[in-house]
Image 1 (cartoon, rainbow, N blue to C red):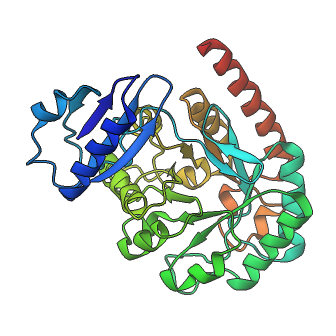
Image 2 (cartoon, rainbow, N blue to C red; image 1 turned 180 degrees about the vertical axis):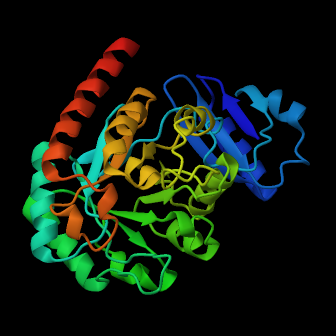
Length: 337
Protein backbone atom coordinates (compact mmCIF):
# COMPACT_ATOMS: atom_id res chain seq x y z
CA UNK A 1 0.00 0.00 0.00
CA UNK A 2 1.20 3.53 -0.69
CA UNK A 3 0.01 6.70 1.01
CA UNK A 4 0.50 9.95 -0.90
CA UNK A 5 0.67 12.97 1.40
CA UNK A 6 -0.47 16.49 0.64
CA UNK A 7 2.27 19.01 -0.02
CA UNK A 8 1.46 21.05 3.09
CA UNK A 9 1.00 18.08 5.42
CA UNK A 10 1.22 18.67 9.16
CA UNK A 11 4.37 17.08 10.70
CA UNK A 12 2.56 16.28 13.97
CA UNK A 13 -0.25 14.52 12.12
CA UNK A 14 2.31 12.59 10.09
CA UNK A 15 4.09 11.49 13.27
CA UNK A 16 0.77 10.26 14.66
CA UNK A 17 -0.03 8.33 11.47
CA UNK A 18 3.39 6.71 11.39
CA UNK A 19 3.16 5.68 15.05
CA UNK A 20 -0.31 4.18 14.51
CA UNK A 21 0.88 2.17 11.50
CA UNK A 22 3.98 0.92 13.27
CA UNK A 23 1.85 -0.29 16.18
CA UNK A 24 0.06 -2.47 13.66
CA UNK A 25 3.35 -4.07 12.59
CA UNK A 26 3.73 -2.07 9.39
CA UNK A 27 7.19 -1.07 8.14
CA UNK A 28 7.22 2.38 6.52
CA UNK A 29 9.53 3.56 3.73
CA UNK A 30 9.40 7.30 3.04
CA UNK A 31 10.13 8.73 -0.40
CA UNK A 32 10.40 12.52 -0.59
CA UNK A 33 10.09 13.81 -4.15
CA UNK A 34 9.76 17.18 -5.80
CA UNK A 35 5.98 16.88 -6.07
CA UNK A 36 4.89 14.55 -3.27
CA UNK A 37 5.95 12.67 -0.18
CA UNK A 38 5.03 9.00 -0.38
CA UNK A 39 4.80 6.48 2.43
CA UNK A 40 5.38 2.90 1.30
CA UNK A 41 3.69 0.48 3.71
CA UNK A 42 5.26 -2.97 3.87
CA UNK A 43 3.70 -5.79 5.85
CA UNK A 44 0.18 -7.18 6.26
CA UNK A 45 -1.82 -4.21 5.02
CA UNK A 46 -4.93 -6.27 4.23
CA UNK A 47 -6.55 -5.31 7.54
CA UNK A 48 -5.89 -1.58 7.23
CA UNK A 49 -8.94 0.56 6.55
CA UNK A 50 -8.00 2.30 3.33
CA UNK A 51 -10.99 4.70 3.58
CA UNK A 52 -10.01 5.73 7.10
CA UNK A 53 -6.47 6.57 6.01
CA UNK A 54 -7.70 8.41 2.89
CA UNK A 55 -9.95 10.60 5.05
CA UNK A 56 -7.06 12.04 7.04
CA UNK A 57 -6.34 15.73 6.45
CA UNK A 58 -2.71 15.13 5.49
CA UNK A 59 -3.47 12.39 2.93
CA UNK A 60 -3.88 13.11 -0.78
CA UNK A 61 -4.50 9.52 -1.94
CA UNK A 62 -4.10 5.87 -0.93
CA UNK A 63 -3.45 2.98 -3.31
CA UNK A 64 -2.99 -0.73 -2.84
CA UNK A 65 0.01 -2.27 -4.58
CA UNK A 66 -0.50 -5.72 -6.05
CA UNK A 67 3.08 -6.50 -7.02
CA UNK A 68 4.97 -8.65 -4.48
CA UNK A 69 8.04 -6.40 -4.65
CA UNK A 70 7.51 -3.25 -2.60
CA UNK A 71 10.86 -1.53 -2.00
CA UNK A 72 11.93 -1.95 -5.63
CA UNK A 73 8.55 -0.78 -6.95
CA UNK A 74 8.40 2.57 -8.74
CA UNK A 75 4.98 3.16 -7.18
CA UNK A 76 6.73 3.38 -3.79
CA UNK A 77 9.58 5.50 -5.12
CA UNK A 78 8.55 7.51 -8.22
CA UNK A 79 11.92 9.18 -8.74
CA UNK A 80 14.90 7.30 -10.15
CA UNK A 81 17.44 6.04 -7.66
CA UNK A 82 20.95 7.39 -8.22
CA UNK A 83 23.79 5.42 -6.66
CA UNK A 84 26.99 7.23 -5.76
CA UNK A 85 30.17 5.16 -6.11
CA UNK A 86 33.22 7.22 -5.16
CA UNK A 87 33.39 9.99 -7.81
CA UNK A 88 30.90 8.45 -10.24
CA UNK A 89 27.13 8.03 -10.25
CA UNK A 90 25.02 5.19 -11.58
CA UNK A 91 21.63 6.41 -12.79
CA UNK A 92 20.29 9.94 -12.95
CA UNK A 93 20.86 10.38 -16.67
CA UNK A 94 24.51 9.31 -16.59
CA UNK A 95 26.04 6.62 -18.80
CA UNK A 96 28.24 4.46 -16.57
CA UNK A 97 30.73 2.32 -18.47
CA UNK A 98 32.21 -0.59 -16.53
CA UNK A 99 35.07 -2.17 -18.46
CA UNK A 100 37.82 -4.67 -17.81
CA UNK A 101 38.78 -8.33 -18.12
CA UNK A 102 36.45 -11.21 -17.41
CA UNK A 103 39.11 -12.61 -15.09
CA UNK A 104 42.00 -10.94 -13.33
CA UNK A 105 45.07 -12.87 -14.48
CA UNK A 106 47.91 -10.82 -13.02
CA UNK A 107 48.59 -7.44 -11.46
CA UNK A 108 50.37 -6.22 -14.59
CA UNK A 109 47.46 -7.29 -16.81
CA UNK A 110 44.65 -5.67 -14.84
CA UNK A 111 46.56 -2.43 -14.21
CA UNK A 112 47.37 -2.07 -17.91
CA UNK A 113 43.75 -2.69 -18.92
CA UNK A 114 42.46 -0.32 -16.24
CA UNK A 115 44.66 2.48 -17.54
CA UNK A 116 43.56 1.83 -21.12
CA UNK A 117 39.81 1.75 -20.43
CA UNK A 118 39.98 4.85 -18.25
CA UNK A 119 41.72 6.74 -21.04
CA UNK A 120 38.85 5.70 -23.33
CA UNK A 121 36.11 6.97 -21.01
CA UNK A 122 35.29 4.06 -18.71
CA UNK A 123 34.17 5.17 -15.26
CA UNK A 124 34.45 1.84 -13.43
CA UNK A 125 36.73 -1.20 -13.59
CA UNK A 126 35.14 -4.64 -13.77
CA UNK A 127 37.13 -7.81 -13.23
CA UNK A 128 36.58 -11.28 -11.82
CA UNK A 129 38.61 -12.58 -8.89
CA UNK A 130 36.27 -15.46 -8.07
CA UNK A 131 34.81 -17.10 -11.17
CA UNK A 132 31.79 -19.44 -11.28
CA UNK A 133 32.53 -21.80 -14.17
CA UNK A 134 30.40 -24.55 -15.69
CA UNK A 135 33.37 -26.92 -15.73
CA UNK A 136 35.23 -27.69 -12.50
CA UNK A 137 38.41 -27.93 -14.60
CA UNK A 138 38.18 -24.41 -16.02
CA UNK A 139 40.08 -21.45 -14.55
CA UNK A 140 38.32 -20.44 -11.33
CA UNK A 141 40.00 -17.08 -10.78
CA UNK A 142 42.85 -15.90 -8.54
CA UNK A 143 40.59 -15.42 -5.52
CA UNK A 144 41.89 -13.10 -2.82
CA UNK A 145 45.02 -12.31 -4.83
CA UNK A 146 42.79 -11.17 -7.68
CA UNK A 147 40.99 -8.79 -5.34
CA UNK A 148 44.29 -7.30 -4.26
CA UNK A 149 45.32 -6.79 -7.89
CA UNK A 150 42.01 -4.99 -8.55
CA UNK A 151 42.68 -2.69 -5.61
CA UNK A 152 46.13 -1.94 -7.01
CA UNK A 153 44.53 -1.04 -10.35
CA UNK A 154 42.09 1.25 -8.51
CA UNK A 155 44.97 2.97 -6.72
CA UNK A 156 46.75 3.47 -10.05
CA UNK A 157 43.71 4.83 -11.93
CA UNK A 158 41.09 5.99 -9.43
CA UNK A 159 38.48 3.75 -11.06
CA UNK A 160 36.00 2.16 -8.62
CA UNK A 161 35.99 -1.64 -8.88
CA UNK A 162 33.08 -4.02 -9.38
CA UNK A 163 33.63 -7.74 -8.89
CA UNK A 164 31.60 -10.85 -8.20
CA UNK A 165 31.00 -12.60 -4.90
CA UNK A 166 30.04 -16.27 -4.98
CA UNK A 167 29.36 -17.18 -1.37
CA UNK A 168 28.37 -15.60 1.95
CA UNK A 169 31.65 -16.83 3.42
CA UNK A 170 33.58 -14.56 1.02
CA UNK A 171 31.92 -11.31 2.10
CA UNK A 172 34.61 -10.42 4.61
CA UNK A 173 37.04 -10.21 1.67
CA UNK A 174 34.85 -7.65 -0.11
CA UNK A 175 34.96 -4.88 2.50
CA UNK A 176 37.11 -2.69 0.26
CA UNK A 177 35.29 -3.47 -3.01
CA UNK A 178 33.17 -0.62 -4.40
CA UNK A 179 30.31 -2.59 -6.00
CA UNK A 180 29.57 -6.23 -5.25
CA UNK A 181 28.26 -8.20 -8.20
CA UNK A 182 25.83 -11.09 -7.85
CA UNK A 183 26.16 -13.33 -10.89
CA UNK A 184 23.34 -14.89 -12.89
CA UNK A 185 23.86 -18.27 -11.21
CA UNK A 186 23.46 -16.66 -7.78
CA UNK A 187 20.48 -14.41 -8.55
CA UNK A 188 18.29 -16.64 -6.38
CA UNK A 189 20.88 -17.48 -3.73
CA UNK A 190 18.62 -16.03 -1.05
CA UNK A 191 21.04 -16.49 1.83
CA UNK A 192 23.62 -14.45 -0.07
CA UNK A 193 21.04 -11.78 -0.98
CA UNK A 194 19.93 -11.48 2.64
CA UNK A 195 23.52 -11.05 3.77
CA UNK A 196 24.10 -8.35 1.15
CA UNK A 197 21.04 -6.56 2.46
CA UNK A 198 22.68 -6.17 5.87
CA UNK A 199 25.60 -4.13 4.53
CA UNK A 200 25.61 -0.78 2.75
CA UNK A 201 27.86 -1.47 -0.23
CA UNK A 202 26.11 -1.19 -3.64
CA UNK A 203 25.00 -4.52 -5.08
CA UNK A 204 24.62 -5.28 -8.78
CA UNK A 205 22.34 -8.22 -9.52
CA UNK A 206 22.68 -9.93 -12.87
CA UNK A 207 19.54 -11.47 -14.31
CA UNK A 208 19.33 -15.24 -14.04
CA UNK A 209 19.46 -16.96 -17.40
CA UNK A 210 15.81 -18.06 -17.15
CA UNK A 211 14.47 -15.41 -14.77
CA UNK A 212 11.32 -13.38 -15.36
CA UNK A 213 11.27 -9.66 -14.62
CA UNK A 214 9.31 -10.29 -11.43
CA UNK A 215 11.70 -12.97 -10.19
CA UNK A 216 14.60 -10.61 -10.88
CA UNK A 217 12.93 -7.77 -9.00
CA UNK A 218 12.17 -10.09 -6.10
CA UNK A 219 15.90 -10.81 -5.85
CA UNK A 220 16.46 -7.06 -5.56
CA UNK A 221 13.70 -7.00 -2.95
CA UNK A 222 15.63 -9.49 -0.80
CA UNK A 223 18.57 -7.08 -0.63
CA UNK A 224 16.40 -4.01 -0.11
CA UNK A 225 14.28 -5.68 2.58
CA UNK A 226 17.45 -5.97 4.65
CA UNK A 227 17.93 -2.21 4.51
CA UNK A 228 20.36 -1.84 1.59
CA UNK A 229 18.67 0.24 -1.10
CA UNK A 230 21.80 0.57 -3.26
CA UNK A 231 20.82 -2.02 -5.85
CA UNK A 232 21.62 -2.08 -9.58
CA UNK A 233 20.03 -4.46 -12.09
CA UNK A 234 22.12 -5.90 -14.94
CA UNK A 235 20.59 -7.52 -18.03
CA UNK A 236 23.13 -10.05 -19.37
CA UNK A 237 21.05 -12.14 -21.73
CA UNK A 238 18.67 -15.02 -21.15
CA UNK A 239 18.59 -18.62 -22.34
CA UNK A 240 16.35 -19.23 -25.35
CA UNK A 241 16.17 -21.83 -28.11
CA UNK A 242 18.70 -19.84 -30.16
CA UNK A 243 22.18 -21.35 -29.99
CA UNK A 244 24.13 -19.09 -32.35
CA UNK A 245 24.82 -16.58 -29.58
CA UNK A 246 25.79 -17.47 -26.03
CA UNK A 247 22.53 -15.99 -24.74
CA UNK A 248 19.75 -13.76 -26.11
CA UNK A 249 20.02 -10.13 -25.03
CA UNK A 250 16.63 -8.81 -23.92
CA UNK A 251 16.73 -5.08 -24.67
CA UNK A 252 13.02 -4.88 -23.83
CA UNK A 253 14.12 -5.31 -20.22
CA UNK A 254 15.33 -1.70 -20.19
CA UNK A 255 12.02 0.12 -20.83
CA UNK A 256 10.04 -2.52 -18.91
CA UNK A 257 12.18 -2.17 -15.79
CA UNK A 258 12.19 1.62 -16.12
CA UNK A 259 8.40 1.39 -15.82
CA UNK A 260 8.34 -1.13 -12.97
CA UNK A 261 11.22 0.03 -10.78
CA UNK A 262 13.25 3.07 -9.80
CA UNK A 263 16.52 1.13 -9.69
CA UNK A 264 19.31 1.73 -12.24
CA UNK A 265 19.42 -0.72 -15.15
CA UNK A 266 22.63 -1.58 -16.96
CA UNK A 267 23.40 -4.03 -19.80
CA UNK A 268 26.20 -6.56 -20.34
CA UNK A 269 26.43 -7.21 -24.11
CA UNK A 270 29.61 -9.28 -23.72
CA UNK A 271 28.07 -12.19 -21.80
CA UNK A 272 24.86 -11.84 -23.77
CA UNK A 273 26.49 -12.66 -27.10
CA UNK A 274 29.74 -14.46 -26.40
CA UNK A 275 31.10 -12.88 -29.59
CA UNK A 276 33.23 -9.74 -29.57
CA UNK A 277 31.96 -8.52 -32.96
CA UNK A 278 28.36 -8.32 -31.68
CA UNK A 279 29.20 -6.22 -28.61
CA UNK A 280 29.37 -2.97 -30.58
CA UNK A 281 25.85 -3.21 -32.08
CA UNK A 282 24.13 -4.38 -28.92
CA UNK A 283 25.86 -1.81 -26.73
CA UNK A 284 24.65 0.93 -29.07
CA UNK A 285 21.16 -0.55 -29.01
CA UNK A 286 21.16 -0.56 -25.22
CA UNK A 287 22.10 3.13 -25.08
CA UNK A 288 19.34 3.97 -27.56
CA UNK A 289 16.89 2.02 -25.40
CA UNK A 290 17.79 4.09 -22.32
CA UNK A 291 20.24 1.99 -20.30
CA UNK A 292 21.97 3.63 -17.33
CA UNK A 293 25.22 1.89 -18.10
CA UNK A 294 27.13 -0.91 -19.76
CA UNK A 295 29.46 -3.64 -18.58
CA UNK A 296 31.94 -4.53 -21.31
CA UNK A 297 34.77 -7.03 -21.25
CA UNK A 298 38.17 -5.76 -22.43
CA UNK A 299 41.34 -7.83 -22.65
CA UNK A 300 44.76 -6.89 -24.01
CA UNK A 301 45.26 -10.38 -25.51
CA UNK A 302 41.87 -12.08 -26.00
CA UNK A 303 43.36 -15.02 -27.91
CA UNK A 304 45.24 -16.08 -24.78
CA UNK A 305 42.70 -15.02 -22.13
CA UNK A 306 42.11 -17.54 -19.36
CA UNK A 307 38.36 -16.88 -19.48
CA UNK A 308 35.89 -15.70 -22.15
CA UNK A 309 38.42 -14.41 -24.65
CA UNK A 310 36.03 -14.72 -27.65
CA UNK A 311 33.70 -12.06 -26.19
CA UNK A 312 36.38 -9.58 -25.13
CA UNK A 313 37.29 -6.42 -27.00
CA UNK A 314 40.87 -5.30 -27.45
CA UNK A 315 41.62 -1.88 -25.89
CA UNK A 316 41.73 -0.14 -29.26
CA UNK A 317 38.32 -1.55 -30.25
CA UNK A 318 36.90 -0.51 -26.90
CA UNK A 319 38.26 2.99 -27.39
CA UNK A 320 36.35 3.37 -30.65
CA UNK A 321 33.17 1.91 -29.15
CA UNK A 322 33.33 4.10 -26.04
CA UNK A 323 33.52 7.25 -28.15
CA UNK A 324 30.49 6.14 -30.16
CA UNK A 325 28.54 5.24 -27.01
CA UNK A 326 29.19 8.59 -25.35
CA UNK A 327 28.25 10.48 -28.53
CA UNK A 328 25.04 8.45 -28.92
CA UNK A 329 24.13 8.98 -25.28
CA UNK A 330 24.56 12.75 -25.67
CA UNK A 331 22.38 12.72 -28.80
CA UNK A 332 19.63 10.66 -27.14
CA UNK A 333 19.54 12.98 -24.12
CA UNK A 334 19.30 16.01 -26.41
CA UNK A 335 16.34 14.50 -28.27
CA UNK A 336 14.56 13.80 -24.98
CA UNK A 337 14.89 17.38 -23.72
